[in-house]
Length: 149
Image (tube, rainbow, N blue to C red; front, side, top):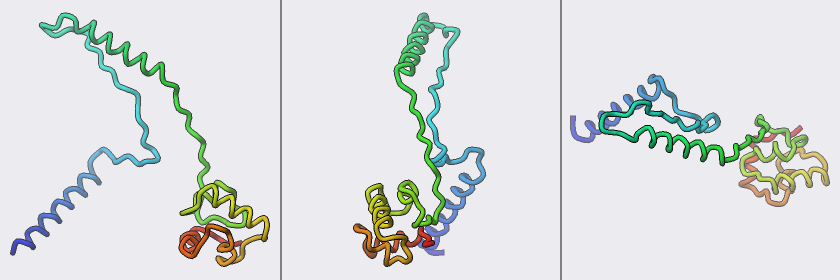
């Protein structure tokens, strides 16, 4: 086996080991949707070690600093975000549903609604291209997540 073949075999073994580690070990990789930062874990030392006279006083100061920092911060409230199932019915979609499409922001969603109200329901992609701000490339992206009624 020559040097390039050995490198390929080493890389394959590394990827195999990495895959096994990620797949079968007891911890999982957190997803972005469910990842939350927890509260700080504070461990108090109840008995001083030999030679540490003031460790209880120091630990009490640390705990009080952490408690005062947590009390001063207002708790963040989560917004209830409506889940949108793709594909979206373009002729009955709201602004929030249109914003879920790839490449559509709130302004373009408002333009789509205004055009739909002015010209009537969209029947094909050509009708959707009449919206200002939708060109050929954006139309190709939109057509993947749109249903015409």
